[in-house]
Amino acid sequence: MNNETLLSYFQKHVKEHPDRVAIRHKDYGIWHDVTWAQYGEKVRQVAMGLISLGFKKGECVSIISENRPEWVYADFGIMSAGGVTAGVYATNSPEQCGYVVQNSGSRFYFAENEEQFDKTLKFRKDTPCLEKVIVMEMEGLKRYEDPMLMSFDDLLKLGKEFDAKNPGLFEQRWKEVKPDDLAVLIYTSGTTGPPKGAMLTHSNLLYMSEAMVNVNPVKDGDETLSYLPLCHIFEQLFTVMINVRFKTICNFIESPDTVMDNMKEVSPTVTCGVPRIWEKYASGIMIRMSDATWLKRMIFKAAMGIGMKYASLKLNFKPIPPYLKAAYLAAYVAVFRKLKERLGFDRVRVAYSGAAPISPEVLKFFNAIGLPLVEGYGQTEGTGVTSVSQKGRLKIGKVGRPLPGVEVKIAEDGEILVKGPGIFKGYFKNPEATAETLKDGWLHSGDVGELDADGFLKITDRKKDLIITAGGKNIAPQNIENQLKFSPYINDAVVIGDRKKYLVALIAIDEENVIKYAQDHKIQFGTYGSLTQAPEIKQLIQAEVDRVNKMLAQVEQVKKFSIIPKKLYEEDGEVTPTMKVKRKSINEAYKDIIEKMYKGGME
Image (cartoon, rainbow, N blue to C red; front, side, top):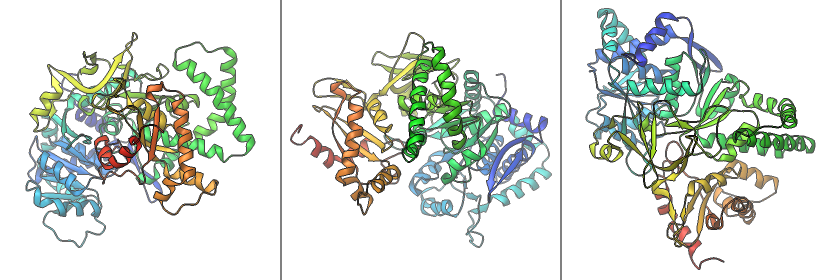
């Protein structure tokens, strides 16, 4: 890769393709194009604005915002000035925001709006390093006087003026950035404790963009939709790395509430999502079809039967008989093509699921309707991806082969160890945690898995989550939970049973679908809590648990379950910003319910 960085590719596009569209965003119902020249000018102004305020090479700057162009203007501006970007989840509490600012030593903090600025008022007494809060949307703050407050527009103006007085300084700063310099701190979501800042270099980012495209090619001008949190490595891969390395067009959502509408408007060619997104799409399709006319239900059922047979053979590398190919083509033309158009998936060449394990049934479902959904696996500490399935060559239950240049081996205890160009430098200001995770150049993933004869990787579970029953049986709860979550009525499931005689589960219902079921069946309820405790809803979930149990070995079957009487919230410490369940917190919060399920043994 010589001396190349994402910054050198960025500036190359600005120079050679100034009038080509780089990103789009939607305001007041209208999509707006931003060319590479315009993108480059904003980045230049941010960088020079920060430098004029005394920003030094190697320093960190934090950003808290939903997905929008200003996020990447700030990100590339920080990196172009020789700095390091530390993203903060927009849903974080003031205390969590303050932790990232103080841990990273950020003197400058980009905040989206008044809501995010208000959080700084609560934590800044604990962050003596913080000097300026630069706000993107000043609505509600225009008359607010605070020496720490600065508008994003004022920073751009300052940068433009400083650039005019210091010609050549911007080029000097970004060209000084070397591949081994830090580019970003990605803070882990902290399922087991305070988040740790994973240090990723420019070399890490550039390698990952090229390795991913090596497996599933991206075309010049491909379109993506930016909607997952930008401080998460998964979204950074598409919005930052691949966009800049391969000149794709990144479309920013209008708001988190308009993702599905924006997906239909943009109809991206490459897309990604966490398992919960794909599960919601799948359950939404199934629920809508249950409301269709008898004839449409029968046609859809027949088409899905054909699609699932076709996908099962294809995904297991088995020959597809000519009659099934013909039947699938008819099903695609009659049903699946229109369905994909309604969802905004009609142009998708490859779709990715990552950040958490996905149910094999969900993967098979989307491949059955003609959406090439593949699964990837990795950690922030490996720049997001260790292995990924190739479009048209995926094995159900496996997460693909290691990326080019990545080595994977399985330790004696089953832990997955990883080495390669994407491995991080360590945790920021945390040598102890770094030493635990990085040993002799090998990243200790914390996941248990195995490699098959074809080099495909299978993830069994998180090492710390494996259940050993009272009978000494080793059980991976993740597989059981994923099968339960394929139900349109189950949002989350936590399987419990360590050192117990049998397994039980805590179930969080899918509110939207269960409410619809209750309305359709005239089940009375007043609150969310009363809905979860309605006998008819318990019977509904029991049927879903029974369905899954039929596919499991006796020792893996869920013998009892309880529906959690409330939604799981990040602010309650029950899920991470990427909606991963915090098992320890859930077990502690609902220990009385769990004990009740074990009290008296089996009924």
